[in-house]
Amino acid sequence: MTMQAALTARQNRAECEQLARRVLMIAQLLPHVQLADDPEAAAWPLAGLGDALRDAHELLVSCQGRSAAYQFVMAGRTADRFREVQGRIDSYLILFPVISHIGITRRLERIYNVLVPDGDSTTGDEPSRPPPPRLSHMQESPREVAREVEVVRHRNQEFTLAEIMAATNGFAHDAVIGYGGGGRVYRGRLHDGREVAVKRVNSLQSDNIQPELDILSRLRHKHIVRLLGSCVTAATDKRKKRLLTTKRTKEPEEEPDGFIVYEYMENGTLYDHLHRNHCSSTPSPVRVCWKMRIEVLLSVSRAIKHLHCHAEVSIIHRDIESSNILFDAGWVPHVSDFGSSLTWHVASMKDSGLECPVMGTFGYIGPEYCLRGRVKPASDVYSLGVLMLEVLTGKRAFLQGGLKIKEDLACFASPIIEAGNIIELLDKRLVPVPTPLQLQALKRVAQIARCCVKWVGRARPAISDIVANLEMVHKLVCRDEPCLVEESFVWPFLEEVDEAPHAKSVPSAGYQPNLVHQKQIELCSH
Ligand SMILES: Nc1ncnc2c1ncn2[C@@H]1O[C@H](COP(=O)(O)OP(=O)(O)OP(=O)(O)O)[C@@H](O)[C@H]1O
Image (spheres, rainbow, N blue to C red):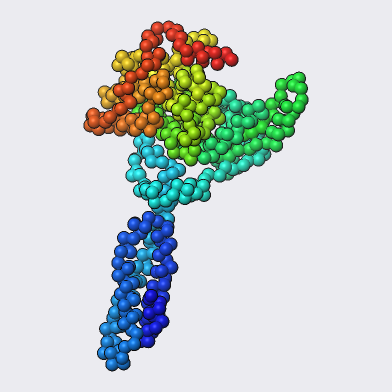
């Protein structure tokens, strides 16, 4: 309408056309601003724009077909009105880049929120920062959000064998930092100076590489070890063929097939800090600080929550245990070893879990998985519960007597927790005697752990409840004065009863065989 009015105006044509051009600019910019962001948020700075456009249109119409006398008398006033309306429209034009900037920032925040969900930023003594403003998911379809995630998805580098060899100094003996079921792990340095850990997976295990790469490449979380890349050598296919076609008269050669490159975790595993004696003059902070131990548990729970609830496809780790918790140079704990992990789709998930071969580490495997081969997210919760008990007691997940597994930690600790003898349970080695407030917090951790190791998967808490409760515990240890929140905080799952057979066993009275032990021993000997 404005353009049309400007064309037919006979008086003040130059001003009319200038005004029309500005209105046209607004018309072109407006749809972009509304699409780019929340229409409501975009609308409020532009609230007066409609009025300004209406005034512009009226002004242009008023310039049509007036007499020469009218023009002469009104010239000064008309010029003032043009200036005023033009000025108002200009002020809205200036706003467009700002609104567009806000729109872009919000998009980036949304992507960040998807990749690094809230609650993942505060552990340890780090100052807590306010969570980034969130947009409601109602504002954009999940498909659009997924597309954004896809765009920024971490791409893993493919390394050549020569690069891997150079980084590990030709797989030097002194570069070996760990041994796992899959193969050796080497410390290395890439040509760009980054320190890395290289897992060398031998030929018979090489089928396990791809699932681990698929899962890890989807994940970016402060407490999950980061995948940097991989190298699958050409030997893989040839070797497989050879293994299939040749009669095996000798053991297959030791030639490796694949390598996974992770960011390097300088400060070793939680297992080492809890169970190995360090010769270093400075004692491990995990050994000497209760607050640190609680922070480790909170971080691990947050990582599991990310796997179960926030990752693009939900993931069951299947091997949560202390030697799979690694500390980086800043002592930030990271969950590692996704070689046994599997993805699952909530919609297709049966209540009874997924049937699959039993994998994991003795002492940490949930009964439903160990006995019936059915895994579900609650199986990770069981392992996390055992990890909590390990951190509280400083004892290994299974107590070994000679070659036999004597008892598992869940079985040992459950009756003690139920009897309320928390002090009896706590690690008494290097760790200082807890303050009353710490004791209150540790008691809570013990109760959460007890709920996590319930016999029936259904009775265990969801990982989000565990994180919420550990966050309260963390607040408690960080406070100097008694915590008021703690009084009013609800611990819903702590009240539930459990029919767990191990709840009835006698604390530490020698070998207390139960079905899980027997099955674990069976699996172990197998
Ligand atoms: N990113 C890393 N940084 C430093 N050390 C690491 C790293 N990854 C693994 N290690 C070391 O290597 C050891 C074995 O690694 P990992 O558990 O991933 O191997 P695996 O073959 O998958 O073992 P598992 O038998 O537990 O499945 C770890 O216990 C740790 O000591």
